[in-house]
Picture: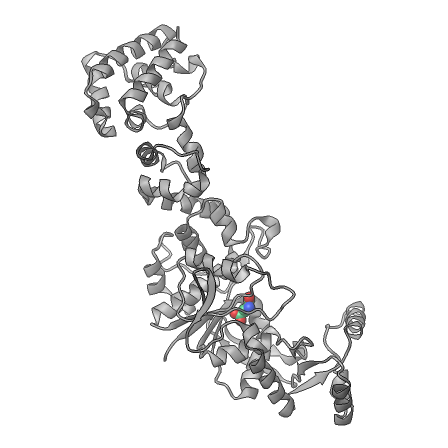
Length: 487
Ligand code: GLU
């Protein structure tokens, strides 16, 4: 079987975390089976479509390294399409949907509905007031052909609705097993709207068939729509695809992930300094873990292990702290140069640091950095003489006088040293150790004031690490500054 999956977002704004997971899973599944992956733009709800959202979506998918074989993409800032089944934007396929809706009218599986918005509103309100299910009451199903023709001649605004038959839909879901939904729960769905646009339900079935989609992997919120889709597949004589409905993504309090409890868009997380690969790794774990004995996986490992049958049925909690931890793990694995380069968008123009110093600083600081946005602050201590209270230079088992003496002696020792001692932090550490031993000194008396002189902080990286980042001249300058503080 030639596997084909798709990711069909509506261009309503930024990419939701849940949509990212859906895109990733469809991508993994297609890749695993040597199949094809399609990007389709579902812009049938004109009122909700946001200008520029398609371009931004395409850019975000590219940033997340999710590539597709068919669909719209950007070439020199312009939208173009690739693939044999286009157009891949639903608003460019309106004729197809109309033809299909008319076919169902002809087959008497759909009907015209001329009810006004006002009538439908009143109907809904009265149903809600009496706690009945809110469904269309089929008033227009009673119209005679003559009455329908008259309304059409008059140019009365209409929609086309599905005539949901009695009974139930039984279907297989790869994740949930056999699902049974009684048609009593299914409304006579509008297929074609008054503005000539299809609804999602008509468009999704027509397009998934036309584009040869074999597997539909999407969020659980679409599960209750499957009966409508299964009926449509049957009425059009299309083969059914495989369905897989992914578990919900939840807030820590188990409610559905929502903006009210934190960020929900991929762009928000990237703007906060999360790495694309960490976000992708974490989101991929919401619903499935390749081995259950670790949490960091490469793309290839996810693809290799991806299996719809292994996806959990129950909701997955989106835990920002876990994501933050994972981001820290990823940052730790990057070189100082990579971290500095990737954090450039978070460091304002002109706030430029000496490249080589910045890289060394990142080598030292990366174990403490969890977000790219923290890099800017982490650099300050290396680029500016830190401020501190003079007493901080005094080790708790020592005195001000001793601290000053140690710093004066250290200065003499370091000044005499060749700057090649500063080539690596390890060399510096060795040199300091020998100095302490040779002079019969105690670590605390020497290293504490030295470290504070360099970092100005109660807790920081080691003095040898600071010295390596700062270099000989700046190290001596900071020691001089500390000595002057103690006078
Ligand atoms: N346009 C729908 C959405 O944005 C797609 C649902 C589906 O995958 O069928 O969620």
